[in-house]
Image 1 (tube, rainbow, N blue to C red):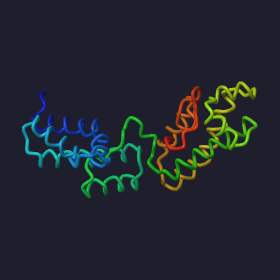
Image 2: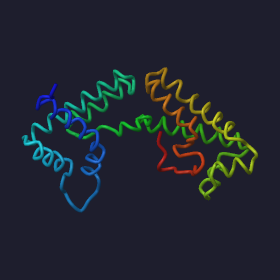
Image 3: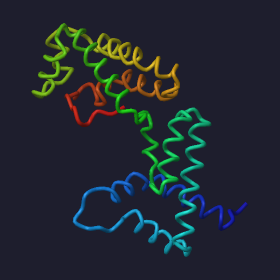
Image 4: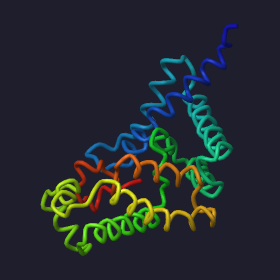
Length: 214
């Protein structure tokens, strides 16, 4: 059965919104010598490709974003509170507000991410019989966790278990309070199980105060 033109357009708009969402908002808000709104440029160009008025493309993109957020709540990927905050941004005119869905383990709460990061650092330092300050210093100096593990005679499993338990201690109450979903916590824990501490792979872990994300 062939798709109708409207359904095809809706599908294209949805995919384009996901693909260019973050890029659009960054381009629209980043400091630049140009005052051009590249999010609007994207809408205008897409409208030209589809042979539709820019206003209709803008409206369809907005609806696709809002419907995608509803689906994420339904699937348990984000909480209703997170969805409401995202919708508020979109409805206030901040188009292309959706995050990168392929990595939505990062749940957007910077304070909570910081707590998880601190808990991980403290737990891993303790497992290595080091102070947290010394661990940070060693990582900043270019040492990897693998290097420190070898020097201290500690195995992978010990560090992963310590980091996982520490993260879980922060995330479990957040799930119970409805701040994040169980799915979001599970993704963070799975990342640790796969050997990612502080948001970077274990074998090349380095301390990145400005770049940490879940």
